[in-house]
Length: 140
Image (cartoon, rainbow, N blue to C red; front, side, top):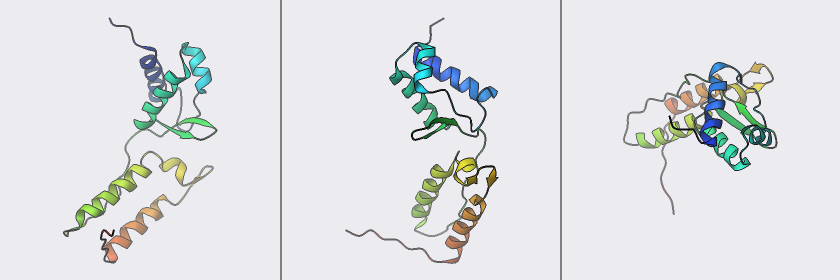
């Protein structure tokens, strides 16, 4: 059996820890320095593993604070039904909003343990786009 690289070991350790609950949702992961000492590898190796897990939506970063565990599971898409020739603009906007909000529902609209605002924001977008004409054009 092929031995895992340090990078693969770090990714597997963190992913398993998140999936098994060793690192619960919202918890801060050990620092890059601590992980590099634990795995006896460079900080760059740890940083690469953390960035890959961030892009895979396991983690999020807080500047000057560290990496935190995202909620795992299904995320609800913003659904806007549009039936006209400008539908691709709506699809691009929907994709942008979804990519911004996905995995962040539990900390973007929170004040400590009081979650508010996400449903209101979704309803505002849906009502705005369904009740008003929306036209965009490119300008130089």
